[in-house]
Image 1 (cartoon, rainbow, N blue to C red):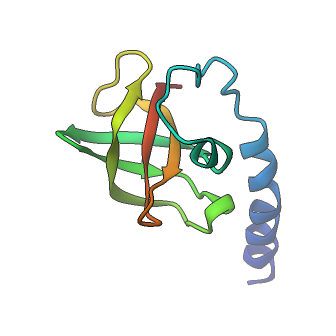
Image 2: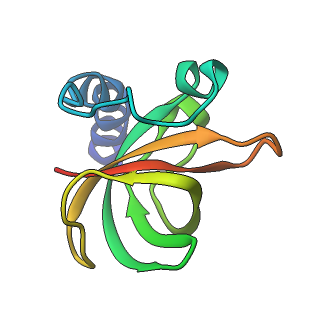
Image 3: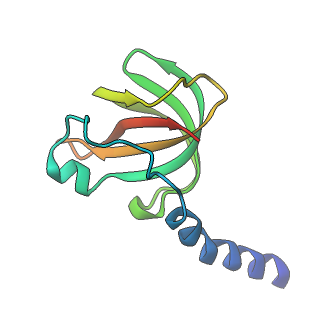
Length: 114
């Protein structure tokens, strides 16, 4: 039990460093129609796309410590002018840019293949 606890603590302590190292420098934010506040509060997460439908995507994302979300599979709404930065299909590993809507809910502002 002691080893499991130690491994869990080590994993939790290294997760923020892994997110800080994500390279989203190739993500062009200049064409995105978002408010300054949305851009400032945007968070990025690694995910697998399970499906994409009109107005939403089902994804399995890694933990997102900036907003307190554990790893999970969920449906996320696509922003009205969400950017698909390359070809994205079910099963692809991607980087999501999540923005907070006026209703306080996060939605996908951009998806970029990893």
